[in-house]
Figure 1 (cartoon, rainbow, N blue to C red):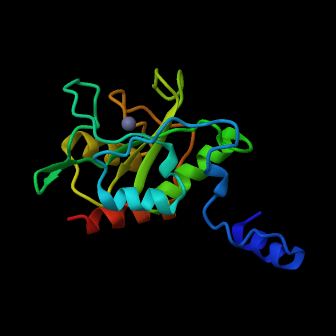
Figure 2 (figure 1 turned 90 degrees about the vertical axis):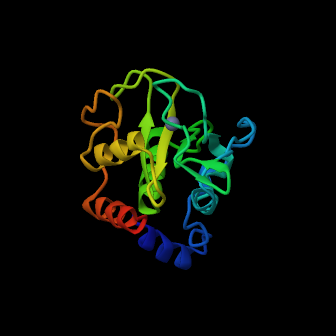
Length: 187
Ligand SMILES: [Zn+2]
């Protein structure tokens, strides 16, 4: 059911659905504590957007200054001597309802609001490692490795070194257009 239909139905049935434009399902489930969030070094406007989407509690990593080839979370920009990045990891633990379905909703909401994002699922789409969502805020300057990720995402690829097709989820034309526009506005 579309949001608007569900919203209309809720008016008739007096179910409080209209109040939840952004999925409150993404708040940590009771009895399943997420570890303390680690939003340090994330571009402030990106952090504000994640708060708006109800995803702040799920941030597991933003800036990471480790000099390792596989680390794409290094600084993208220095503002007043402080390092910032547009890369952010989001926990998929403790989602309510059907997990893959909720993750696809999160990927959709992220890209509608300025992030390209992939679900990194161990053994799938070229990823081997912990399950999480990797997102990149496109509304600020990015370093070359993240620029390449944005290009990869726009081409339905996985944003990894292998640059293979990404099969878990695909952005709609509308979302592709939004990301291109957000990207253009960042310059
Ligand atoms: Zn990441």
